[in-house]
Amino acid sequence: MKRTADLLFEARMLKDLDRSGYAFLGNGTESIAEHCFSMAFICWVMARTVPDIDRERLLSMALVHDMAEARTGDFNYVQKKYARVDEAGALSHLVGDLPFGPEITALVAEFNAGETREAQLAKDADQLSFILELKKLKDTGKSFPEQWLEVIASRLKTDTGKQMAADILETRWDNWWLDGYSE
Image (tube, rainbow, N blue to C red; front, side, top):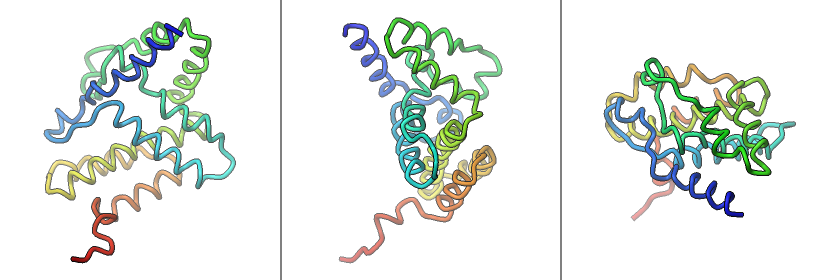
C-alpha cells in the first residue's frame, strides 16, 4: 500500500497547484483539485440526466483527467504554444507500477481522445466548470469574463453540455442564495 499512499499524496498535491489561466485572465483563482471537484460534480449530474451512459466511467474520467498535473503543473493554451508537456510520461511514472495504473491511463487516454460519449460529456464538464467560474466573476463585476464565456461555450460538443451552459449563462451566480430571501 506504500505506492498507493504515494499516489494519494500526489492527488492531494492538486489542492496546492493553481490552474495557470487565471493569472493570464487577470482575476480569479482555482486549484486543480477545485476544478476536478467541480467537473466531477457536473459529471455526477450528467450521469443522472443523460440516459444509457457508463456513469462510473464518466465520473472516473473527471477524477483522473488532470492527475498528471501533480507532476507537470497546469499549462494553459499560451504556454502550450512554447513548452511541451510529457503528460503520458508523467502519468506513466505516476501510476505505472500500481495494479490499477492501467485503468487510470486508459481513462485519461479516453478523455483526451474524446471519442466516446462519456469522454465527450467529460470534456464538456471540463469546460462547464470553467464557465461557472467565469460567470461568477462576471456577475461580481469583473469585465474580462464576457469575451471568454463565448469562446469557452463554443468548445461544447454535446447537447447536454450546450443546454447546461445556456442555463448557467442565463442564471445569476448567487440566484440560489437569494431565492426566497427575506429579513
